Image (cartoon, rainbow, N blue to C red):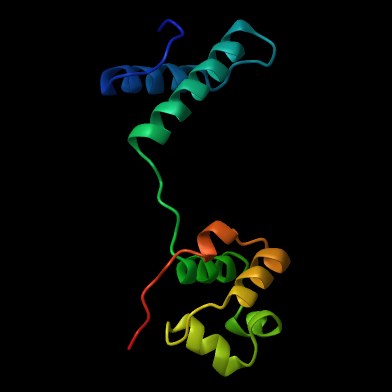
Length: 123
């Protein structure tokens, strides 16, 4: 068993993964479950530093939102405008406006931080 301290090397990271795998079936309120929680917290910190996940670009985030819910582009019309405007934005012919970003964030819960990122338009 690894001692509880920060994971600093890839070898310690791999050892923590093995130990976590062995503890996955730990019963609640046991020392094993406590150890599992400690290791997952340490692993999360290590992964955030060494394996950061970049935020998706805005159009990809919108498309993912639709796909994950089985929705068509027309679902966005109340938030963006006509079907032509939706198509222009999703085909990267027009940029998202601040008003559209606010609406998508407030009405659909898509991260404003993701939506405000710059992205390239098709010319």
